[in-house]
Length: 218
Image (cartoon, rainbow, N blue to C red):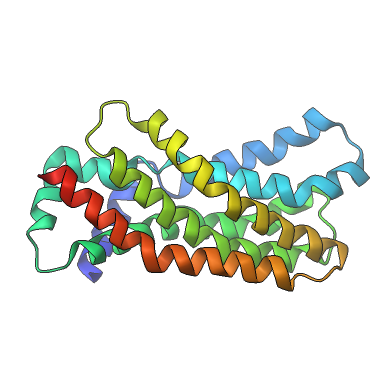
């Protein structure tokens, strides 16, 4: 599993779908929002949690088609299917590699980009907590979508259409945690819901992704 994780991390960086692309897109979204809504500091402060979460979600979406596509194209996926490592473990490692190369950099960059949107002081910690808790679910759900569309020509658009509705609950509760934290309100309820979504996805979706991959490889 360690060897597979190391390999996927190297491939993600070399293919250009890792650290740089997601962070660049996140930065572009954050910079463009003030131009679109105007320089009103109060308005930017109110919408900052939601905008930052939307930017992080879309940045994660950019690299989903690379999770399994490269292995499918060079035949590595067929070899991995015959390896001693269970398919569920393979899928979990690939989701982890996607989170490390895409989700984790976004989590670390979000507080810095929050300054551009005038995010209130108390909101920085809760924004970091919500992204740290919610982005693993985005990677696991995205891996499931990648498994569904692996091998399809021009499957990137179909992947986006399949995954985006599944991302909505994570977006709602993640942004709500950041918003309530920024306003000094109670965050326990949305935080528990976000944790439930993430842990539920981590527990169930690797098995669903593995089953789908076995069907596609037959």
